[in-house]
Image (tube, rainbow, N blue to C red; front, side, top):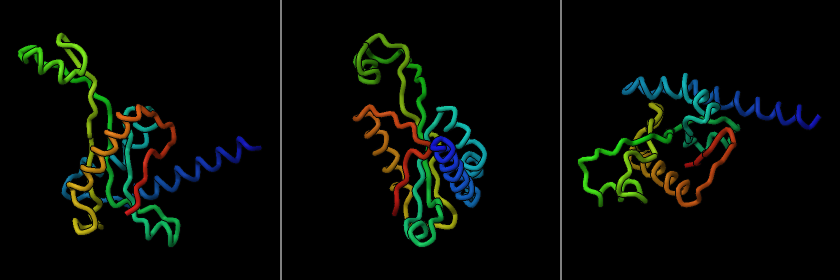
Length: 155
């Protein structure tokens, strides 16, 4: 019975997120709108990216509705290091070896604000700062979080 309850709770969370995602609009950049609506959940399930939602706290507290103000996604990417760089620069990029030919890096793949919100609510720089702070936290703590929703920041 507890597994059924747990599965029902997960399904409820997914439905809430899918509903929130469906009301995200970004006319300036259709790619970021397409990503969150059509690719983000699938890429989460496949552990290819982590998508972080910045949601409207007031709406959530009032009616338990998740309204996405902005979001960003983070992935790992293999960076091919040009061998024309100096050994010092290669070591600085890789962190260990002067002879590294590639290095795993964090990639901020998507970053967007919902058209319903203005830069007075949150600026692009603030969204980017949230993404960078999350990367620093992941790197510093070396943590891996298996929850479906990785991060919700209320503003």
